[in-house]
Image (cartoon, rainbow over all chains, first blue to last red; front, side, top):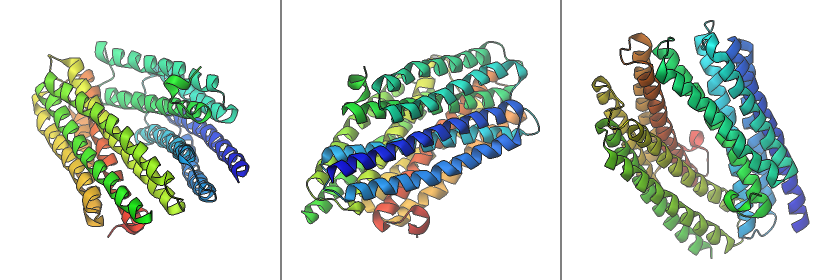
Length: 217
Length: 217
């Protein structure tokens, strides 16, 4: 039973890794929607988002069934909770990409972003996509080094967001509404990145049994 | 063993209810910090927030031990996950109140809000505090009516936030930085309220065994 459990748990992690890749696609599509005022990219974001939700419900049910088949000890329960938490992180990433796409959809056919800010959001979009992909890779490889790298990538996103705030605070010719949109969009990318880091920390926990601070190499 | 489990689970829910009350205090203090540029209220927010985190870790450990003592069936595992999720909702509420207080702290001794916007944020603060208190009451009473009421309160918060956006979009004499601050603050209150609703939905699930849509009266 025990071996079966480990093997099935690996299946669950592989499915979560695929879903992290799907989250990478949602933020890529959302960034395209934002930068190009592209409605079809906004719709793809929503479609991918719904796909994530549906598949996560299945993964969760699978995990419950898996555990109910054996007499779980406390460490199994912690693994269960971690798996469900990782699923919730991926779901939030999809929702946040959805908010980005929705901002583009609401302003369409106008563009949300002034041209001068497009490079900053291209960088945010690339970093967010890369972090989701790396979160998926960490779930697949179960290497704590892969997971730990996410934290330094997160610093890049935080810095990009700080730069945007600096621009808003110093001289801002684009009006209050765009300032509000940019502040919120920056927040969505930041939270997306935070959830990718949380997935990395979760992998460290699953591999080492220790919280990220002690478990990372 | 079974009866013991039910009784201990009730203890865990009572502790979560107390923590929801503490979350109500964090957002109350944070709103005071914001509206009065009051540093000591910002510090109280942080202190309460740390208290929530510490006590949640204990509740979680208690829940794992509780379940490991018996042979849990799938429905017990769902209860475990729901308890951990409710804890995570309360933790996020504390963090969001922390972001509100931190905004006040960063701008101190200046005030973040122009006088004209103080009434709107007083209302947001009151609604958020009330929702956290009601989430605690629902955890205590285990009545689905208490839980379901949170959804209509949430509409109030959403409307207040939409009004703020309207003001930013129409005529805004307060500059881009304040627009960015107000947009983010509105988002923090909105998310705080969302987590209170999620706690209500969790109570409905714990009482009825059904997701909120089917389980609510």
